[in-house]
Image 1 (tube, rainbow, N blue to C red):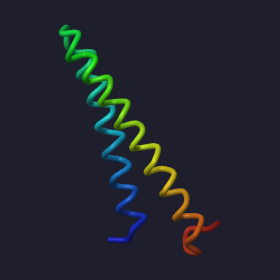
Image 2 (cartoon, rainbow, N blue to C red):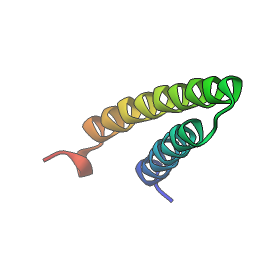
Image 3 (tube, rainbow, N blue to C red):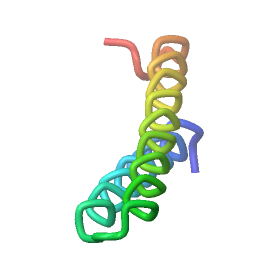
Amino acid sequence: MATVNKLEQALASAQGLAAQLKTFSMDTNNQQSKQTFKQLAQTSENIAQTLQSRLDFVKSEEPQYRE
């Protein structure tokens, strides 16, 4: 599997995880759990942003992805 494909897959997973964690935070009444889920969602969003930046860089460097 090409690096771009792996990055796209990891990005989708990180975005999905962030969405699930946000849902968990809304579904619980326990404030400590709610805060933990929110923090984990934020971390996942940060990871997704980092992966997106790397994906954009790889696509800009590889001739087959240039328009």
